[in-house]
Amino acid sequence: MNIAVIGTGHVGLVSCVALARMGHEVVGFDVDQEKVSLLQRGVTPFHEPDLDSALHGELDGGRLRFTASASDALARASVVFICVGTPMGEDGEADLHAMEQAASQIARDANDGVIVVEKSTVPAGTAERVRTAISLEAPNLDFDVASNPEFLREGHALHDALFPDRIVVGVSSEVAASILRRVYEPITSNGALLIETDVRTAELAKHASNAFLAMKISYANALARLSERLGADVRDVIEVLGADPRIGPAFLGAGLGYGGYCLPKDVLGLERLSARVGYDFGLLREVDRVNREAMEATVEKIEDALWNLQGKRICILGLAFKAGTDDARLSPAVELARRLRDLGASVVAYDPMASANAQHEVPELDIAPDPYVAAIGAHCVVIATEWAEFRHLDLKALREAVATPILVDARNVLREDQGWAAGFAYYSMGRRPLQRHPGASDLFVLPEPAPLDAVADAAG
Image 1: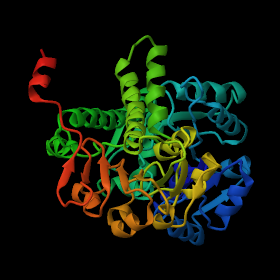
Image 2: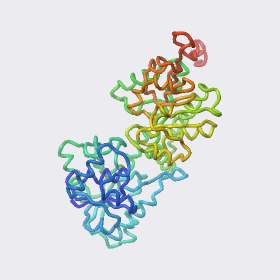
Image 3: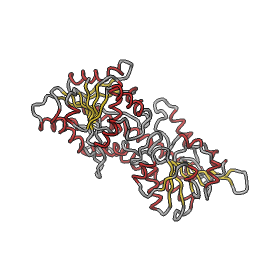
Image 4: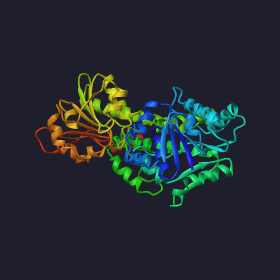
């Protein structure tokens, strides 16, 4: 089939490559001429595993091309996927300006019979607005609008596009349903689950999925706060929870909290949408509050370890919002660096992929070429992103580089014994701090948990 994709960001570019890999003829359109020029040369503007080689393969195979001309992209398309950004506005609502622009481009240049598919994450009801916008500008155009939300994980996006755990299609006609079945037949024939529903349900399903994942993360972080007060180990608590097949272990890591382009936006977006239609979805506000609390708890942990932050040098390891990506947008690690700087500390950081993007977010941030250079003269080392390489740090070399042996593991990357065995006072999330008494080999655990009788008294 002839397919056009409007927008070549993370979702759009991965969709272009995946649809071409399925055997379709795909044209990717973007208003950014510089980005289009890069893509035409096979250069990806962001890091995503295996995407570079796959992009080259589809360009060389002639199934994929890119253009900055909407009329060129839409000239032969029978299906148009809208993959533009829908960033969060200051009021928490999704900014749908780019969706409106895409609708206008389709109205001007699309052919009769085209199926317009919104893949961007949008509030339920957006498809109807897209339909109205196109109809007002092109009243004689024969078209239909469908919803096909993406469920791609950054760092695994191409794999998720080609081997999805589910494909959700929201349609209002059998014609649209039939065409989208044909689009995805190359992978549904190999067992991919296709769920067909109405348009508004598909739109809501995406927001609901992301908000639920955020809720799991906040639940784990709330348990971390409780575990610290009771002297329990949140990692063991989570292992027990995750072993229950009704719950599962994914998205139950305690740490700095969730971030990135999707989860914060979608939690607030769904809460605002609910309020707009008269339902008080207070649970989502609490999810957001606990997430912000996780950041505060980390800052307090660093302050407690250092006593004062003024004039202290802090090494942050990891800047991406999660491992496997160079995306630093709304990254908790970047926000932590910003907060520590605002409190008077100097910050030097290292990340395997995201340093340049993080420095775009915080231009004053000092960047080091490796973890050990970043740690030179530091009064505290903070692990802020769960990169696999941080599990295998040479902690003795790191200990020799620092001015003060304090290690705050804000992602619980290390085993408890690793940090203190290398001579660090080791602080983690949801576990008590560990350190060796100076000049002795015995392990100190600080602070003591609340006495059980005090816990009983507090419980009434």
